[in-house]
Image 1 (cartoon, rainbow, N blue to C red):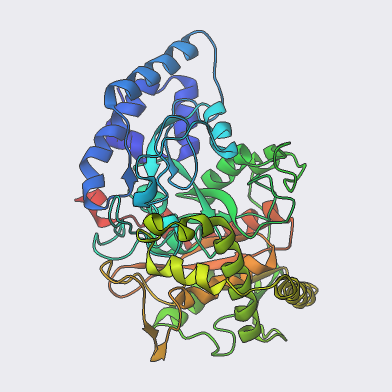
Image 2: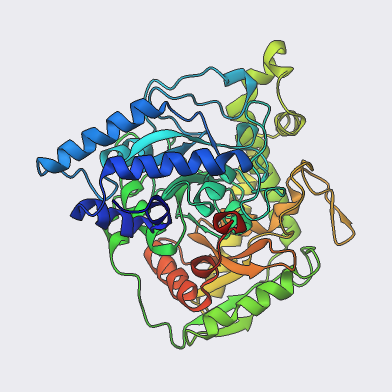
Length: 479
């Protein structure tokens, strides 16, 4: 029998190989992960709605019986997986972190969840989120806060904060997440893991005919595992008209590539437009050596675009989108009383937004994309910090100021992620190192639209040179 710690510390690809060759059984895998979750999860509260042990062990033994008959469902056969609590897994609660939906049980699976199940995974529970996924800090009145994997006191980021912390603490082999305003990227940076926001449509989302700003995407302890999960989540689905007809297996191909003479445009803080916590920008600039070690040429880049105008474009889209999804809860006095103030602000902010304003925002977004296309005519990838602050005390709902500048909204402190969201391009967070207090930070790599595999290749090359996530793990794992 393999040591249980050895099982949970395996990468997802190593675990898949071990299960497939019979080196470990699905029963051993499930037992190891459940024991590890019991030991570690109370310190961070990353996994919620955990299912009964007996049921999960029976499912694992059924997977073993399948293997004994020559049936392997896929690369995730027997994997214990927890789903972000904004997505549906049949028979499990989907609460959105809201007391309004604390007893809501999903009657079916979200598209990507069905695909994860088909690949052989066993759904063990959910990962914690902020209320309605709003804000890059995971806390809610149903389950409480998720704490940072590296100190057990600071924010784990959000909205995929539970997923990121669970990955860093080796309570899951891989995890799904979603991203509107950095929700795959910010928590990955705060917990020293990988979060990938794909080109919209690579992973099916909904039945909308409009290209959507939110994205579902993969997270992993390393880039290869993240790419493998994307190979499961990606691909056209007939119920999602904006989903792309592509071969998802491309993401399971080897990621190694020569990047000598490839040009990187460093956006930094957009010429001091974005305030940054002391030490953060210099840490990220030092991390650029990971690209240079691969032979890349890194240049400071200034984009010919008003970042304040981009922020106003973002506010229009954000108000419009959030209001359209949650207005009935606001209109009902009973449910309105249970909504957090930030959500009410979003809904009320969208009250007077006209169709003309949304159209104008769409045209402004097109101009932003054109500015990026001009940059991409010279540079192969664009890079900038993933956050403007290091992980902060989890008791604070959101930073009220950065470097002496007041934050005028609950999400202004994460303005650094909206260039990537509004670009419609693939964006991946890669670890950038650690602050003096031992808390992590990350870099965003923006690739060319539809260049998702190429972006993962760049992330892989950087990861192999920098090794922050490969060699440094949360202290609790060693103690």
